[in-house]
View 1: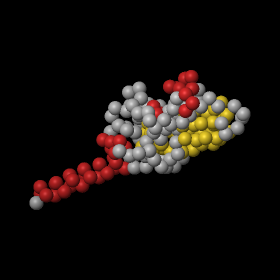
View 2 (view 1 turned 180 degrees about the vertical axis):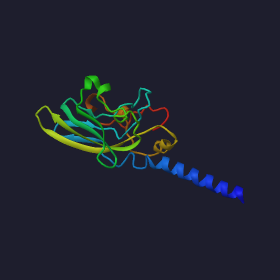
View 3 (view 1 turned 90 degrees about the vertical axis):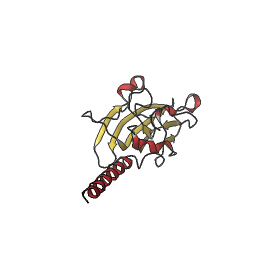
View 4 (view 1 turned 30 degrees about the vertical axis):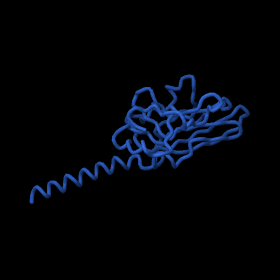
Length: 180
């Protein structure tokens, strides 16, 4: 009898832990827009990234075409509530490693799962477009494996080139070895 109770408790605990891990990515990929077009501006905002320091998809930032003059008030917020995880008054693309979000909050703690972003995009004519949306910071753990078969995940490495700058290139691989 004692063994049956122990096994039942262990199974319940395992189901609870695996359920929590799976839930952290439940709202990821496919539900949010990832391309924005306004006037002559094209903006691709990835809806997933993996800051695991492998050189691929490590930073979250909008990918823009040459008609965008400036990205201002770039904010990353927790999925629920108004907690600001990251803020930059402007993004300097020549120094993007210091302006893109690396997936950590101000205290150096990794934020995992869904988050929201807001920003203003200004074109060369001075027109401003407010953009907001959602994306996910993936930890490339076992729970992220479910995203391999889920359509709609677009990573920074899938940003378009040439005349497709500021758009997603769905033909490009995401270059993730462990997940995605």
